[in-house]
Image (cartoon, rainbow, N blue to C red; front, side, top):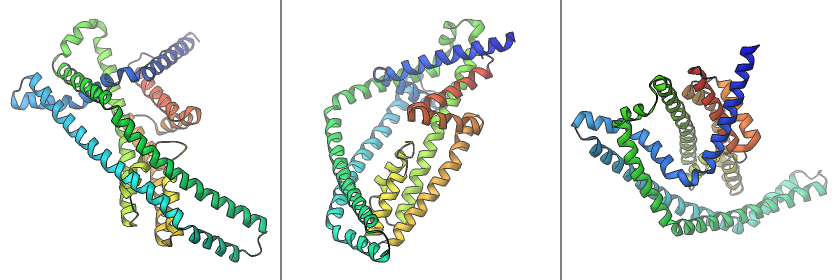
Length: 350
């Protein structure tokens, strides 16, 4: 009984401390963002920096500068290309969708008339309700695309207005990344000297396990997003759907959101192509939607559980409970709760 009470006490203390740290971390993230990013980037650059030091006998400071500059050059180049390409496609997509709806009102009404003739025995009030709902839906789509274009344009203007802040964040992140990379690849002994000798081994193990599991968590969802993006891009390209790149990116992002999901992109695309007469494309998009959704449901628990070293049921429970409780934030809270519990359990802290 005493052991059980002690176990419960440890779990309660762990939950309280974890909750406080989680809230503090995300509440202060706007102030600590450059340094959080710098730590993540430094962890990525550890191995390349050590390789340069060992292979070419470079000084650690020079190797850290080289890897940091090359890494940031690649990241900034890709982001610049991506922002320009996606913004251009997004604006064109919004304008063309709006124009398409405005120019094909007669075609939409034609399909409504075909529906009415096909179901002559239906109650007129039902047909009228369906027609009104369809008209309302098309108006909503039109207004949404208009607001989407406006949002992209205003977002671009906001981005340009915040360029000085972004430059400051990039500069601080770059400098902090260099210093963290330099310290992580050469000053481990100094860090160990600060820690009491009796707890060095256990703390080192906790840090290594945390790096491995959190890295696995980030990698697993990066893989899931990339698979959704790739499936959508290949599928849309096969069916010759316009603006495949921007639609694939949005689908990959929406795939992580519990309320929206990829259906927010796939279903309107299928409806638009069906109305325009491309029934094969519309059917292909719907089939692709089913395939991508099925693959997502199969691979997510397996990829996440294998990356984290957790049981798939624990991962599913954390995702479901988190999403149900508080959306994306709740999902992250529950996933990290399971991860850190597993880490501390491995080192017999809990």
